[in-house]
Image 1 (cartoon, rainbow, N blue to C red):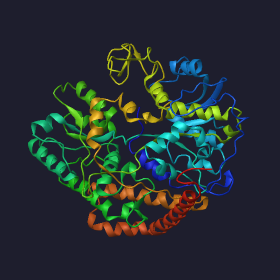
Image 2 (image 1 turned 90 degrees about the horizontal axis):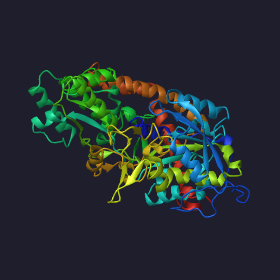
Image 3 (image 1 turned 60 degrees about the vertical axis):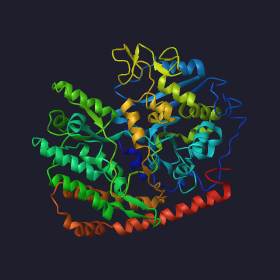
Image 4 (image 1 turned 45 degrees about the horizontal axis):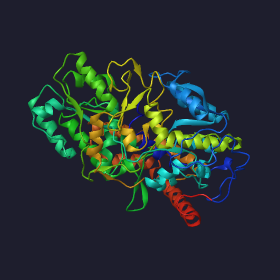
Length: 559
């Protein structure tokens, strides 16, 4: 039920390409929209602040684009919908789009001016193509009516990160999901029984991991120790920060911020990127990584792992269960699987910066004309950003889907299961009740205690293991104008396609790394230098805009 790995990094980079907001008016970076509070407070609570539960003073109906997941298809009689209507006075009116068609349906609705009141499950950056048409609400103008959101921005020190979502007019058009702490759900899964037999601990560095793979290869010559999946996109994304670079799902628009030089560079041409590629190319050349790791489908990689042909594979919490099920199906009862702490690399023990935003929501610009506009903002603030709303959307209703034990801890009702916490239970928290659903809570991103409360012990342990890693500087925004964005997109697509192709060739040994200079020349022929120059010019403009915003209003505040 979790989103694509590294998507946060990727979309954060994509969000750097902001449009010139020709369709949304003009003015200074600190201009704030006017609200007629007397006329637009129908149904709103008179005093709504942090810690308050939202209950509409008059019935409130809100439409949303609902991403219908086949694993828990929408049901009209879900408890989450009934409880919101009966106890909070809010009726949600879903415009249903199947998961397989969600993004296309979203594009059509927003582009045609038929956007519902709000659209959840939207990554920061995905709002960019829709801004110039005027379909989206500049939500940063209305944060005074969202006390829980602004409280978490302040307490969790996320204001700077939020300001990176502001466009050339100084406004932000998306409400991101917020995390108190970064969430680490992806790593390399290993055959723990083999690691234990070899007397290995978790490798502290990628170099030590290579040494372990070499010893496993000697002890188990029938194995190619590491056979990877997802075209190595997860692995390159995980490894990138420890080489002070980005790769795989984290490559994004191909630009990487050099904080020391205060400028962007083209990721795929840097020495750091080359060092990362050399590491994995060495594994393939030495027979420690499967040469099909970048070409095989997912099922093939899983079957190799389950059948004892490999001992390491990229994974996440949900995929761990897939791997264990695969072992059960072939009767390999002694196999044990777990994820290791992501190793450190030559650049340090790093993780990517900006890891505390998650999928969020956009609002239709038309909502600003509603007579119950303030009530709608209050409700969304409560459901998606208050602790009470997050517990409700995650756990459900006390006494029905969960109980509080004598130690004050939440535990699922005996008849309710999610993720195997109550094996054999007759009902499922998501399927039968609608809770723990990424539409009603931003990819479960929230207060760390709430978020981890329905995570497995091994994922909780992984968070503890990863907590001391160094977070790299946040990648700043690049507010391209609309015309610049068109040109940048053309260059970006050509360049990143070339990087992806050459990366696979280098790693798989189809192209010698001594040919690196020729590869960089190919990037230059595709306008790499012009692309970087354009990005840095836009970046400097963006910094000047943020400086202006800071001088006039104070950090991140609108009038």
